[in-house]
Length: 186
Length: 240
Image (cartoon, rainbow over all chains, first blue to last red; front, top):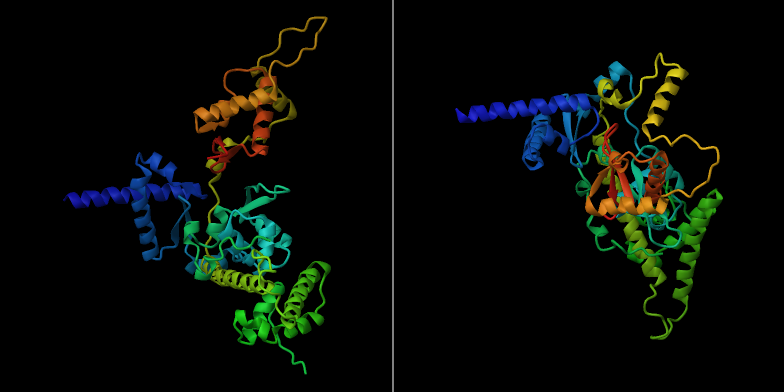
């Protein structure tokens, strides 16, 4: 008996969260939802994770994104062709090789200056950087305390979304990169 | 006799070197005993480059030739070489290894990008997003002026002007306002934007406080954050 009331309660919470996210459109901080439900964030996290698994498991048209302690609804990529058929939309942009290289260096080394990126790539990066900033994938996070106080760059929430990552800890890893972490100084 | 090698597009001198290395199935560590240097030189010979890129490719060519020339000379006796200085060979090998690692990460990120490609998002509901915005339809300039003067009236109006005026120094300076803001922040971690302007101060004081805030942000001493559109603006110590 007790179990069924628990299930009912959980389903109700799922439904409330779904309603909030539907109307919000943009990412909603977990904290705000926890406040609205009069719960702690700690209590909410397992619920949200279960919710995400359920959406994914049923391959529903709407999927739950959980990134950087924020929640957002999006459509399942599997159904993109049908959406495109009706709305004649194009798929989202994909980055060029040059932009992607620049972005991956920023993602793994952030905060990083333009000179440091160029040292790794061996070519100028102005154009890639302007494209990345235009798409809102990178932002200025501060200035380095060296001569000229160069801008320090980092990635944004839009970056996580573009690559379907839930946090920077989710970035794919390559073992070779670890020992050379601070190697470049020129 | 030179033989030509077809390469994919490359992103720079390091990329070109890596592609040559892969093409000839050479280990990065062995590039100086292979024919990669010659390959590289003949590759850039036939390239049409703009000035920006040309310098990067030429600089790499110079490095390769320098390394080659070093190999022809007897090694300097032990102790003459400065210890901290990295061999140009080692430096290049390290750069190539690092660059290759990033190329691999790029591939992984590309897969993530492809997987996330078909996702569509809904824009925020207008009823909610618009809540902080002003509706201008059907409003003329006069109404806007009235509204604005009403706002200005809320700030304390100065006493009626006497005939003879003395121009006084403002009682408060931007520096004082900056100190006040940092003082508040020392006590409280987060301040809402509105909190800064509490207490019915004069218009000049509001302006100075705002200038002080901009100055603090410019100096990277505080940061302003807003979580989402139309949300409250908060001021935080930049150290946090």
